Amino acid sequence: MIRQILTVPDPILKEVSKPVEIVNDEIRALMADMLETMYDAKGIGLAAIQIGVPLRVIVMDLVWGKEDAGDARLPRYFINPEILDASEDLRPYEEGCLSVPEYYEEIERPAKIKLKYLNENGEEIIEEADEMFATCIQHEIDHLNGIVFIDKLSRLKRERAIAKVKKVKRIAA
Ligand code: NI
Image (cartoon, rainbow, N blue to C red; front, side):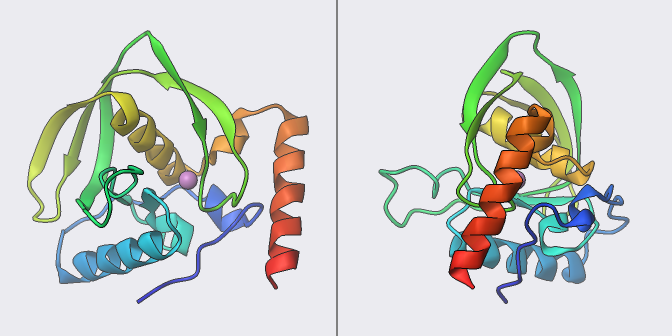
């Protein structure tokens, strides 16, 4: 089921999400809805809080996000993700977010990280991430902590972003 994506400055996006206790069918159904919503909105990652569910759950598809990928899909699921280690060298990337439609700005984040999470079967995985994967998972983990990427910008840029989102939503309404 496609859910409504919350956009800034909705205060729910500032909530800190709670860990998932058991990876069960309810969580898998939530993740299926999140993926459907993400694909529909043409995004490559989505955190549960973006559809108003304050749980530490992320879905992502970086294969689908590639321009030359056609219809290829590789959905991935991250439950209770934690960053164990982060490189000192940074990777800049012009980020966007489904909660900040049509706004993009360069953000620098650690280029490589070590990540721990539960997959869709509740198995613990420890994995290294770099390139787009590193950028994207850090962006999504920020959402679980109530942080949207524009919170990392100057107040002026953040206000401009919010004004643009309001305008975009007015035109769409
Ligand atoms: Ni986002």
